[in-house]
Amino acid sequence: MTQQIIREAPTPPPLAGQQVSELRPSASDEPVLRVNNIQGNILGGFHKDFQTLIFLEIENPAAFKQWLETQINFIATASEVIAFNRIFKEARKRRGYEGTVKATWVNIAFSFEGLKKLTNDADAFTDEAFKAGLAARAAQLNDPVDANGKPIGWVVGGPDNGKVDVVFIVASDERADLLAEVSRILESIVTFKDEQGNVKSSGAKIVFREEGGNLPPPLTGGEHFGNQDGISQPGIRGRVSNDPTDVLTPRNNPENPNQGKPGQDLLWPGEFVFGYEGQNEDALKLEDSKGEVVSAGPSWADDGSYLVFRRLRQDVFNFHKFLKDTAVALNTQPAKVSAKLVGRWPSGAPTVRTPEKDNLSLGSNDLANNDFEFNGEDAPDKNGFKNDVVPPSKDATGLRCPFIAHTRKTYPRDDKTPGGGQDIDRSEVTTQTHRLLRRGIPYGPISPSTPDNPQPDPNFVDRGLHFLAYQTSIEEQFEFVTKFWSNNENFSQQAATGHEVNGKLPLGHDPIIGQSKNNKPGDDRTRKFFIHLEDNEGKPQTKELSTPQDWVIPTGGGYFFAPSISALHKLSK
Image 1: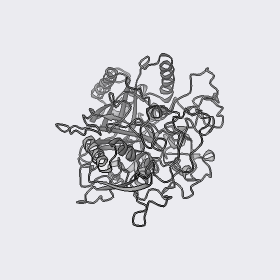
Image 2: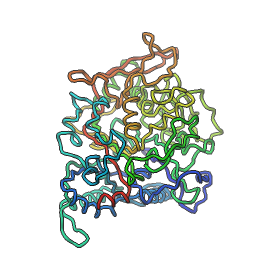
Image 3: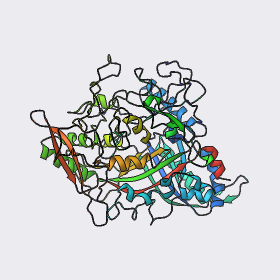
Image 4: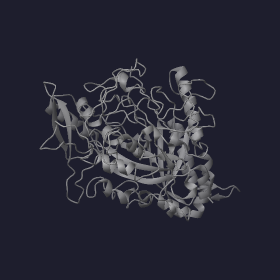
């Protein structure tokens, strides 16, 4: 029987009235979140098995405003999503399986150009990346400019396939329910009835739509390369009601009141939703890092969030072929090569804690699979509280988890990195100002290929990931992570000595999503990355790997703003 892997973040506390004091400490110093005004996918997270994205262009703003007003009651709020998630988890815990309750939800977001059509103060937004749009910033992110994946040729969001002003996110526990809600939206775009019963046009046209969904076994909970996804998510400070114990993210680590689950640092909500305090990158300690209230610019933008969408096609066969060929060359297993490149085994178990082989019980244990740092000595086992299958470990040398590993590149924790702090004692304080709330989901059919048996598709198959992430600064969160961590060959600034090549510590690109710095017309896309392996005597040896191919190819995307419910009413007037 296949082990069930459940990925959730952040986990709400038990239902109101249940006394589980260790999960619900008093948090009277944390803000009460306006959950009735915030869209549901931002803080609660939809976490559904089926999802469709619908992209629109606004052709008649006046008509669109009338149509938008009729859609607001269908937009799921954070309070609705959080309440459902609590009921869902209680029912699953009691019955031992899913499917006892279900829901279908809709959220909406607008590009800068779309907002300009609806309001005269869109220029008040201060994030220059949002105003420019993803396609215009693609070259800065090292996306291809003269190769497969360049914006000209994107299936959505590029300069040659229609303007994208609006995106709808429709998610459901059942595909039939998803299709019914998608049909309702599509039909209303053609014609709808206003409050007086008059039949009208929405003033918008459909530019693109695509369905995604949780993958079937054995990839359930993961992505097409074969790895579990969405494990490490930030915890969020804040309360769902005036009850001082009704915290959004429960406190599952009594040893550290500044964490949710072990290893999940709690961040101030202004990192993800406007109108609340964010992180203070100048703080000396993470627990003292409460900053100023974060504003988007327009006064009506509070309770909203920026949404980054990337449509990322995955070349599964060539990735698996690389794993197999490299494993043969290094006399190891493809799964270990993958773990070195990702930083986690297929189960989600971190290589920092289990460097030599996968551990299913660790990978599926939400109180242990994210409980680690990268620097310092190994922490002692605290009387088994953390349900440890192996003790929490640290890896300052990059032997267990290479500095180039995807999980280390995208979330370096206490590594000393560019923009992540020059003082190792403060590195994690600044690192936490660059986090994302990820809400991605795969699209396309699974591949017949595996790392042990790479197989190409008989014909071209488009599969990959709908990357979705919320934040309050596209420049300092999504773009920062992409440019200064994933694509930065000199990513770590505190490297351990003893692994140098030609007098320098070799690092390289993020092998999974990193893009080559050779991003000029005519240049190849070769990427290099270095991993450390132990030789027959247990000593570290540095191996240089390279590939001329991108295994993850951008094929669409956009920068959007997800307004609050009250802001949607304003935009519809």
